[in-house]
Length: 308
Image 1 (cartoon, helix red, strand yellow):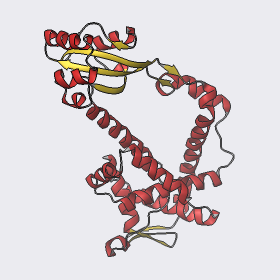
Image 2 (spheres, one colour; image 1 turned 30 degrees about the horizontal axis):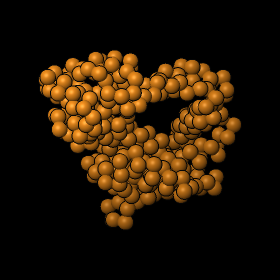
Image 3 (tube, one colour; image 1 turned 90 degrees about the vertical axis):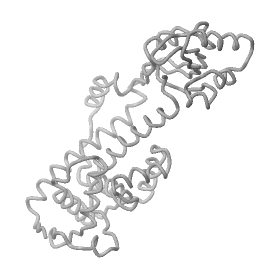
Image 4 (cartoon, helix red, strand yellow; image 1 turned 135 degrees about the vertical axis):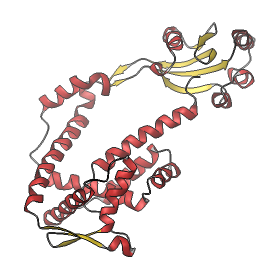
């Protein structure tokens, strides 16, 4: 069958989980301990400052969420504490407005608060841990910007990155707003097409004939889908078709299809001028993050660290 609204929702959810992975991967700083006695337990001392179980718990929760090994979690918690201490020395902090925006963006990407909560619950992570992790990511960036203000991606590097990734990152795939009636046999498809030619609305005919329950409920409207996501026979048809109902049924995996090409958008390459500023900012962030990793390696060697 053609990807239904349910499958499109799943694809969006998976994309959001990838975005969530980047949020957690960028986190630095320390997590606030929970009020419970367990979270308040001291698990280490870093330069004379207690490292609490709550801080380590955030690292462990993130790794469960991402399906990663918990090996090295204490070391990561120590690094976050070192970043927190440096933030105090520099007088920088995580802007609450930035944290709130990132949480709102993430919630929207996940399809709402309920979907986000479900993903957190599956990983035995709490909303408080998520918020602290995002705050730590904002704090890490504030520290690296303060420590390495002169580290910046040059125009040559930015343009080279664009050229190397123009096809996979800066090209919007061709897409089509598609209506589809899915049936098991050609004769049934021809009957549906006949009713459309008699003037019956596409949504009405889709609800009457389609065997795809998801698209049937929406009157056959699949919304916008990328052309590449369609079965090969349908790709060929929608690429060549003008707007309107396709004149003949199409055989493809899962049955026969009567298609309505509502609108289409060709593939579009985003120009370098359009993405340059955002790309330079992101590459600068990555360069400064690498610089901070080097700083952390040196700070860790000099630090007084005890594990309890």
